[in-house]
Image 1 (cartoon, rainbow, N blue to C red):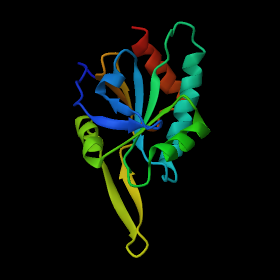
Image 2 (cartoon, rainbow, N blue to C red):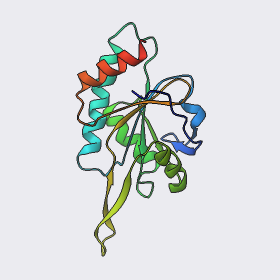
Image 3 (cartoon, rainbow, N blue to C red):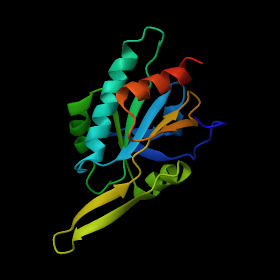
Image 4 (tube, one colour):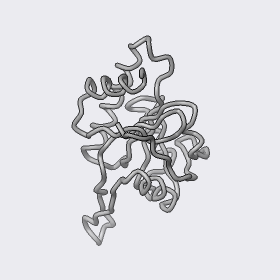
Length: 169
């Protein structure tokens, strides 16, 4: 947990329903945010699955009146359009929100949150590539400010416990 909530830079992206998504969409509810891409072979699907399990565990606690929204922000807008994100996230949890947009707008939020990512060419002839990226999970409060980040190795039970401790303060 951060000692002081951190303000995020404004951004203008689109969600998996092809609707505008901005900083104000993080306000009035807590949000769990993960950065990745749909073509990711390992870290992204396992983390989204972990977030789905965490979401279900949080949903079982009646003290939590409003569940945090779960947001997957693509760092690969070349391949991740709204339709691709919608199909991908529906497999894990249809309530999850997929976000994509212009690379410069994605850079605004990743820079503010110190999220590293880079494109790694696999085969120059076939335009095949992977994305190296930060695998942390972030929590923003109902003012849209960053309040915590969680290590990628945390289990759903550990995430749930940590999130509850923050939400139920």
